[in-house]
Amino acid sequence: MTDPPLLSALQLVGLWIYPIKSCAGIQVISARVTPDAGLDGDREWIIINSENQQVWMGEIHQMALIQPGFDGDDLVLRSPGCSDLRVSRQISQNPCEVNIWNDIEKVNETFSGFDAGEHASRWLTSTLGRPLRLVRLGKEGQTRKALMPLHVVSLASLRALNQRLSEEGHPPVELERFRPNLVIDHEELAPFVEEQVSRLRWENGLELEMIGACIRCIMPNVSPKDATAGREPLAAVTRLSRERAQKNPIFGVYGKAQAEGVLTVGQFGTAF
Image 1 (tube, rainbow, N blue to C red):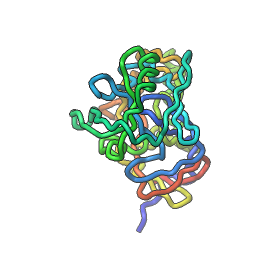
Image 2: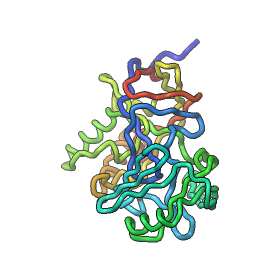
Image 3: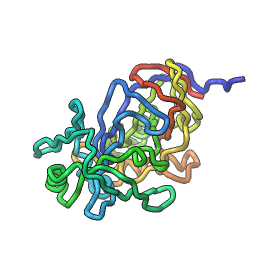
Image 4: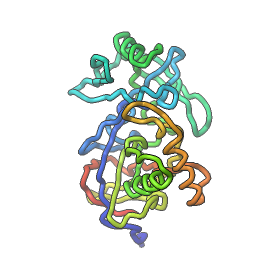
C-alpha cells in the first residue's frame, strides 16, 4: 500500500549549484544527482583563512559577489573590478587539511583537500581584503554528514514572504538569497507546504527523501547584488515561522536522492 499523494503535477522550475561554499550560484538546466554528494559540481570548493578554517558569507559579505563558472575542466571566478581567475577542477597537487565548522554538533571537523595555489590565493586576498586560499575538498569533505545534499525551496513560500515584506514596508527579496538547489512550483501550491512533504517522486522515477527543515542563519540578509546586509528578510522569516509554530526561522527543506539520477528543469513530480 502506498501513501496518497499530497500534491501531483509539481514542477521543477529552477536548478542551482554552488561550486564554492558561500559564493554565488550557477543556474543550470540539468544536473546529475547522487545520494551522498547531491548535485554534480555543488560545494566542491571552499575558501579558508590563514588558520585553515573555512570562511563564509556571514563573515565576509563580499563573497556573495564572487561568481564561479565552469569552462571545460576549469573553474572560473569573476568579481566586479577584478580580472578573472581560472583554476583546474581536477587539481591533485598541494594536499592540505582544512577545518570546517559542524553547526549541528558544534565542533570543528578536519578534512583533506587540494590547495589551488598562490595565484588563486593572491586573487582572493586582493578581492576580499584578507589572506585567503581556495581549496578543492576531497570526497570525504564533499559528502560530510553535516552538509545536507540538497536544498529545496518553493516559489509559493517566496511569494508569501515577499507579500509579508511588502505589508511591513520592505522591498521584495530575490530567490538567490536562500541559495536553493531545487526550486519547485505548482498553481495550487500553498506556502511552506514543502515542510509537510516526506518525499518527492519525479516523472523519471527518481525519488528524493526530505530529511529536515532548513533553519536560517544571517546569510539571506546579504544582498547578492551588492553584498550589503540588513535585518530583512530573516526577521520576516522568523515571524512567519512563529506563526506556523516553528521555534526557529525556517525557509525551505533539505533533501537527499534515494539513488543516482538526473534532475532537469521542467520535469514534473509528485509530493508525498
